[in-house]
Length: 277
Length: 316
Image (tube, rainbow over all chains, first blue to last red; front, side):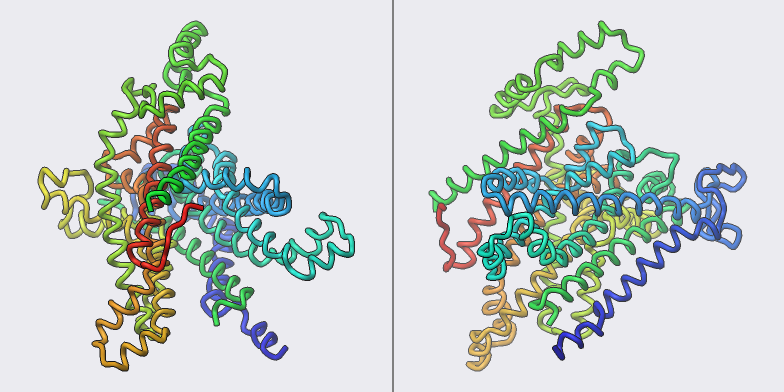
């Protein structure tokens, strides 16, 4: 008990705690920022083109005189929407499929072979290819990312189910005549929750990175709505004259993904007694 | 050994076949087809029908799939709707670019990852270890295309020491080719070096704690030899696994880097095909990427036996 208490008080470890704080600050910046700094992210101002960062333009302006700070915040909102929805939908779909595969032998082989095939394709490539068949919109980016990451989550959940299924307490529950649904709800899901949170955190990070990649390649949500990816895509022809337009969106992508990854590592160490000594 | 490779090849062929199903079904199920892109929105219904008949788009899906698959097994990936040329030719033309980039990035990822991982494991729990962790974590988080843009800004725009893009075949002009490859290969390889460094560190830490390392040290084996010959040799299997995954993933990452550095590779082909809804090209590229993954996996399995004679490959 003693050690358990001490672990509790330590939180997630310094790095993970800092990254949780960083994520919260980033979310506050993106969500509350536009109320404080009210410049329009899409207003074209011909006279203010390519202004370097200054007091009047905190992060400078782009080739159409639009405020980079306002665009970075608006782009962040899109990233946040895509990442959150992708995370929730993927975890739900992955859990359902993983439970089915883990609990019903007949489905296991089929589902796992299909997931093998999905895993043979790098996530970004599959997402790009999926965008070929749909309009480049925010909803379709989310759909593509959910399709890409669901097999990965399903595998993790299935593994967990197979492990938990052999536990004495599950055998006991089965012996008492508990129905499958009850065993899943009372024993399997609670035991799989920490792993699901970890997976969800990583998917949140990857979704931000992948959405930016799709937008950068021009197969994401279309302009003029700013996204971190399409800002980078437009700005890379201007690095000679205006490097700041490329610098800030990329920095924010890196920060968000880094924080999500470290947070995921922290949660994993916290719940897995074998790791993080 | 031969039996193992055959069995493995068989199960991976199954994976490849499933990829053909995904590549075909997922891409064809969606509404919208290339005729709209190729002919424009004001095409007459007759022209659309003629176009669809020419490319077999009017036949039932299952028949289209069987027809496509029967060509695929003969290495004929169909005809690009936009380019009007065989997909296989289009891919083969661009493959050297992507392969060169992938392999160069792979060399950087392995050298950097192994070195960093060894340093972190050997000087465990020191500032060096923490610095390596930070470098690795950054590698997993930074968008490769942003890293590429930053590198172009520094090396091509500011200091003007390296070109900002383009491709020179290594067999035509090796020095120029190397100069063109350096930035893209680093932008791509750095990201995977983090993964390799992490695995090297973990695996080496375990090996360095082994009894055989203590024995080697106590009988006076030079420290360098202890690390490289005794510890690293025993830590190699997990490192090899993650390195194999890297090689597979790098080929996918090349897609994005090719766009940043304007390299005429398979990745650019894929992205352009997606924008133009050129299905045969999209499907062909997907298959190529999956085939690469499968080949790398077989190679890694075989290398297990080479690195560790205790591993016996069984066809199970």
